[in-house]
Image (tube, rainbow, N blue to C red; front, side):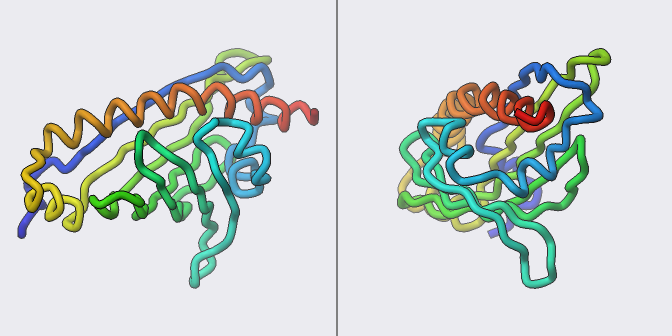
Length: 176
């Protein structure tokens, strides 16, 4: 099956929140790659567990277990970019439902508003991979129907977790 010319996007979700701390004190990469499991769980009722490790070649990785919609997700986010104000994480995520794996790109960023505040952005882009496309075809599910369900679930999840992640980043930046 050739899918290169097809848009396999299942969801795009971006939510922002204000951090009441100077941007110079906010370090998304350090926060994300050292986020305690209990703090991760406090940021969303759907968060089950988080941990950090590295790939075989030494790249930082964040492991997240959460539910998004009716799917239990096990995500192995590898840091492609991990800087104080920008993290781009990519995972081929196991979805513990019949439709198998999806690719998730997760970009966390912060930009300065003024000397005392900044805006945190939590962007997720979920895509079908060949395994999920094959499942959809086998079960007569259109890509449009799969997109509709995934988009709703992703937006709902992102709207809950983003302000809580921003508060967690703010506490860390302010040493609280």
